[in-house]
Length: 113
Image: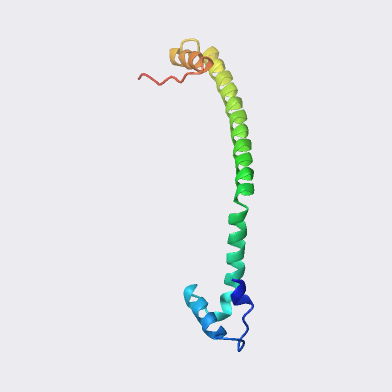
């Protein structure tokens, strides 16, 4: 990339041909080549910083997993309380009592209708 950057129109060799070749290669007009260069340099920097980005993503995944597990435990506690309350509110409802026992035992019951 640096060899094209240092080439100016009318200087040594075939700079116009080089610009034309690059514009054809990247399928853009010659005037758009500076933007393409910036884009490619950004992509290269991202690739070179891959290990740093990977560590950051690993930390984000761990944080997301920890948050998910915390919320899952909270939901489980609330469901257990709701099932126990439902079982107490209608003592004749065997299905509700079964659901309350199943939730307290951390197993899931399916309705047998």
